[in-house]
Each structure stands twice: as structure tokens, then as C-alpha cells.
Length: 145
Image (cartoon, rainbow, N blue to C red; front, side, top):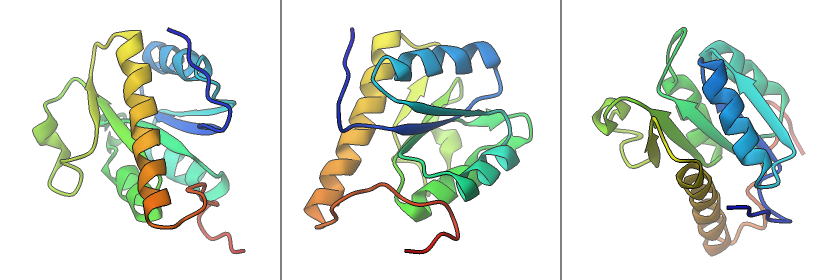
């Protein structure tokens, strides 16, 4: 399946500590037209990236080298940036705050991954439009207009 959305996701954060999986995810989202893909292997690295880059969407492995991705999930949720989890763990491991977030189980099919990324992004865009926001693109932490 090849889908490219002209006004879709421009930048995507992948928090994944298995480089083969991260590279596969990168290839898949690039096939959707994502230009800027940022791969991080640790929570601290992802939080530092969020402080300096505008991110449109994210895919978070639940368990990474320095623990869980919950701090990154919290930061993304606080900023209204859509994201999903990718994990071999059960959904119960997400905790109460993120229990309703989209999650794809590993291993996954390429097309299933693309669809859940697009669905996550599209749903967030629909919610922002319904709330009267013109865009969900968010500046880095600390940036002001």
C-alpha cells in the first residue's frame, strides 16, 4: 500500500530502542510522505528533541533503554500532539492516563502500521477542527509566538 498525503504529517518522532524496528518504522512513515523523521532510543533523548523541534505525531515503544516512554507520552499529551504506542506488552501496561491511546502490537504488518499512524493523525486533526483550531502543529517546548 502506498499512501501519500500532501498536507499530512510532516514530522514524526519514533521512540524505539531496537534500531531494526526503528528503521522499518522510518521507511514506512516516509512512504506516507513524512519528511522529517526523528529516531530516539531513550526517553531523555526524546524529551530533549521535543524541546527543540516541532513534532506533528509520534510512535512510542512502551519499554525503552532507560525505562518506559510514559514521560514522553505525558509531554505529547500535554501539548496535544497525537501519538500511538508500539509494544509487545499488553495494553494494560499503559496505565490509566494513556489506556485509551492507540497501540499496535509487535510484530505488526506494514500496512497495519501505516493505517494506525494515519488513523491517529486523522482523528487528531478532526478533533482539532471540531474544537475550532486551525492547526495541530505545535512549536517546541518553551517557544512563544
